[in-house]
Image (tube, rainbow, N blue to C red; front, top):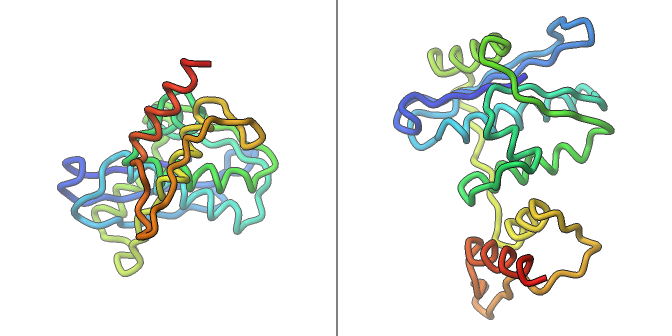
Length: 193
């Protein structure tokens, strides 16, 4: 289970909490992380909690995972029901990279009342600045990987032929279109098919 929060939605303290349960619903691992006091949104904190929980599960050599969170948006984005914004693209991309390392996983939305431990851990992190010296950096994503994310959202795979949505780099390293323009290009290309 995972939960994250940001007081004032990016103007106050932010924190992440996660817990891993065994098949008997006993806690086998749990953790929390203070994420700073400015600039982290609720959704970014939620994604960070999910990422840190997945990394811990991988360290424990867990191969099958049922994931529960009370953020309906995050669950829907991972399940490809909701589109991923550019702001959350790097987080979503990181989660999807981690999920490929599991043999099997599910991710489901639960009510906050069913996510009390992760919620408490996220609040503990915010209140007590847990692990303040090791605040993880925000994930980064370039335009090319964001375009890959958009293609995946739209049901394309790397084996499919796609009409050039990937931007080309100029000599100075800049791309000829932004991630937002790539996303619009893909949507238009799909409608034209």
